[in-house]
Image (tube, rainbow over all chains, first blue to last red; front, side, top):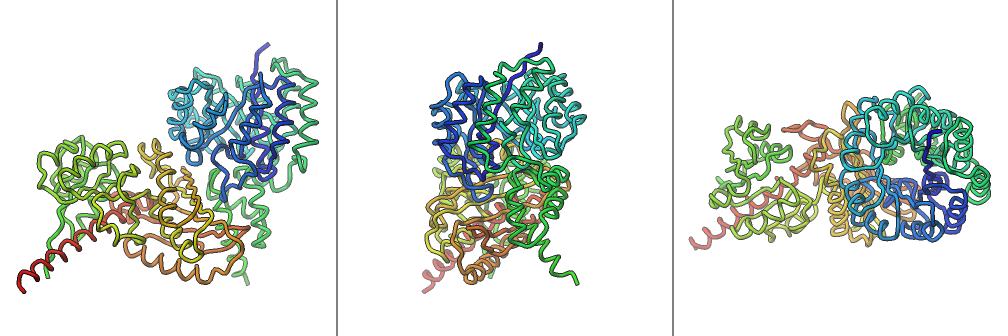
Length: 338
Length: 302
């Protein structure tokens, strides 16, 4: 039986679903339940990672230090992870204190064509002797040959693995298979996959990744994550076991973990809202959904038009300011119509 | 009246240095005495030679060997290099205009503090996003008084971000934040930088946010217009695309900067803007020197 490592970003990606308002009590409760279930790594933080609390992508209820320390106090065997995107997070202001507070695993993210901005951050975590992974976000936006080239850079910086994020939930299973196969064949480090469910394919895509040789899979309890949510952790663990993979996660306890998330974290159960489908079709970052909804309302324009227009402009994660500009342009165009 | 041109050297023959060279050659106030790189074969050096500019591949040593060649040095190398260069330039009595995020010299944003800068001998041009956003943050502070929080997000085309920019994301963030704090009277500041690989490349764009209860934006809109006009005098491609709006507890202002397309392509407004600011500053030094000289002449005659 082949072994797969489960990575659980419920307390980070899930923060997108509640406008980054997770409380310390919620973090503590979930971390304890994840520990009990034998989850290898729990990732905590603002949806966009360290240093990302901002007017651009949303202000966080808690600061990074509180989130990290709260999770730290409630984890023992389960490793504590954080996510960081250079351009938001810096080594001195964000990574150094996070590691000082006892973070075990750091994942450094960049848009899928920009891996070289992760070099310094990856090197720093390596120097501190902690586990570090490179993440390519929005991986539907580049051909697989480009992804391989970018992953090779990440490998050369000393990362222990690379993870492709389908941040817009835009990939089909066959796309995932092709991408992951190419990476697994050509890289000397483990390859992972992070799915989103905009098109209802999160579990299917995660399974496709596993079949193609991925050895790290992300899943969130009840799918709690940006937009339509992520691959649902309890389902993922169950189908992986059924397909003959070992995850080391306790089935009953991970099922309980789903209940904990539903009762204590989730305000509205992740479901594939019509707008999330559009986000997936347009290939726009799932984290945009809440902002698009609100701004469309304020400007009196169709949120679907905003998503498709943003997709046409090929915006990347972090460009949330374009939503306002686009809404304003759409409103102006509407006003000009006879 | 014929004013004497200020003799300058450009240290660093990368994209920034080469684009700056073309701007200097166009200036009626500056003379490029020396264009300095490390490799005669680099594209920037080739360009300079094709323009008939004297070049050297000796780095800072070129100035040590020939200290009288210039009065002002543009440093377009790297933050680390500038930290080494400044003690040398200081000893030789040169004015330095530093385009790296070294944060060694006083911060200079021409639309905001050019006059005060004439008393300094080492000026730091903050960052590309800083040159674009600091004047707007400054206006926000002027109109509303001390701000609680100001935030700036810039998105640049991937193709306009060279290896130094990519390696120095942290320096960019910290330097831009320092620039915002220095000139906006905000208590806290945050800078964010995105790279976008879209093809054709996107034009540099910057959004300035301030946390604010709903407020009257008439005065702000006027002050922003005035500031934009002032910036456009030395950055022709600077354009207001979303005038101040209030949205969900925040004021939002968006601008776009198209480059002049001198050496770099027009989408690289981020590189153009910092060069335009550096040029404006050097020209101000040139003019202030020739004014000083005129005054001396005047005093002698009388």
